[in-house]
Structures are given as structure tokens and as C-alpha cells.
Length: 206
Image (tube, rainbow, N blue to C red; front, side):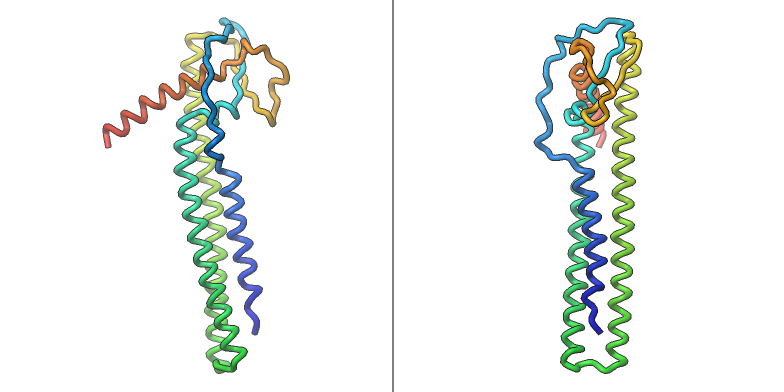
């Protein structure tokens, strides 16, 4: 009545959660120093662009939200691993009792059913937590993108650019663009200044 395979599917679920955490979190050392925006020479009517991946790495709001998300995700991962280790220990103890003939058939079946139920519960919990983390990550990104879009709408009322494009190293929407049309650093500075005001206001009201 070997039970060792039971733990393998649980470990797979937990590994999936851990992989999700690694995918959705960003190393802290990616935050770069914001360069001066004085070189921007774009004028009204120009089509300008910003490097979205660079902006996200330097945007304080994204950094704060990501840090909070990462802390929660690590707690979830730690809790699931703790439960998996306890179940694995109980399975090994059960196997030892079976091998030594310390359990009646009835008691063995009872413990086996209990272990299988715990396995199913832990698998369901791991899958649920994985889904919740994915949803929270998407909401986080939606919040950040909404803040960026709202800021750009106000920003462009003063600059009157014909269009503001976004590009990343992966998408390459802008294959080649004049540096003078790159508004990334100016937008980063404006976004961070606005976010700091909001964050300080929220702290005072707490």
C-alpha cells in the first residue's frame, strides 16, 4: 500500500506556484537611475514613443505594488511547502507502520483514505492559490497601466503629440526611432512625482 506517488502531484502543483512567483516578480536590482529628460526635443504634432519595459522598472508605483505582491506570493509558497512536507512525513510514517505490520487492515484503509483526502485538498489549495496569484498579478498590471494611461492623457494636453507609442525589447513596435522622440525618462519623472504626492497623502490620512 505504497503512498509515495501521492506527494509527487502535490510537489508539481507547488512547483507551479513557485514558477508563477518567479515569472511575476522582478529582481530589485533592475531599478535604474532616471536620466535627465532635457534632451527631449519633440514638438507638437510629432509621433513620439516610450520604452514601456524601462518605464515599468523605474516607476515607483509598480515597484511598491510588486514588492507587496512578491511578499504575499512568497508567504503562499512557504505555507504550501510546509503543508506538503508535513503530508510527506505522515505518508512515510504510514508506510513504516504498514511495513512493520503495526496497523490492522481497517485502520490502514482509514489512514489511507485520510491521506488521499489531504492530498486532494492540498492539490486544490495549490491550484486555487496559483489562480489567485495570477489574477492579482493581472490586477496589479491593470492598475499600473491605468495610472500610466491617465497620466499620459493629461501629459499630452500640454504637448499635443500626434501619437504616443509604446515599445519594448520583446515587441519592437518602434524598430528605429530618433532619440529626440523618446519621452520615456520625462514620463518616468512625471509619473514618480505624481505617485509620491499620492503616496504621501495616503500616509498622512492613515
